[in-house]
Length: 287
Image (tube, rainbow, N blue to C red; front, top):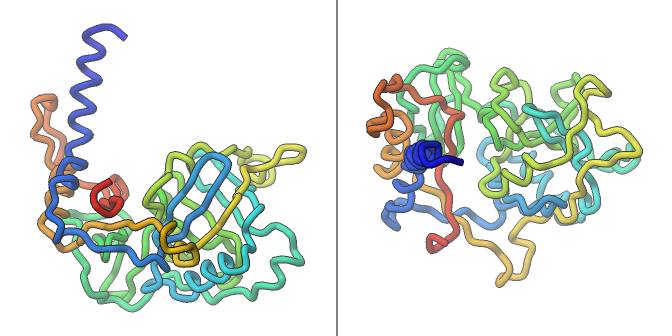
């Protein structure tokens, strides 16, 4: 890389890291702990993935993840269907094993008006309102009297057949925004760490069996699937997320929406896509 190219890369990098600096400079009061029973730790061949579960929107689906964890049911299973730019799907594949887990009634949305909603601040293509509740990206519609979690990158949701209530043990993690799936499948969590390991998973070919990785090849292994609360206390990770209603959170959004850096001699529109950033999280103590 030449000197000029290196300088351009440096300037671009400095522009992109502005939101991170805002998060780092937030006061301690701007952060809240994530309960360990809402932390799902997925160990994969590519590396660890940490998911925050959302029992407020999808209590039965979160309960299912906790039950699968308690039984070690997904240890040794695989991410068997991974499609570039779409989703990474894993879980049980053996029909007899799946039959032990009753299907769940969908929790694709809930009544409008959840506490703590903070508007994104501009219009959205898919929902009449979008914003955040407790760190999760949310869409809602007062006329429909419904609100729902969004299929942004890192969202974790339950796979199903055609029947809306056929989800059971097979989950997927969104690799790139799939907003047309909103309200059609149940989102119950979001990746807060290790998304680079999800993105590194072995791919299938969408045109062959809808992306299921074909024998003799196999998808990447899930070596352990555990709720953090089940681990010995000294092994439980402690994560915090930024308070959605805090001034610090507004600063993070503003740093993504308003590009005043000298690099931008043509200023981008002051518009923010709900899926273009992740509500900040950190290891406790700012590690």
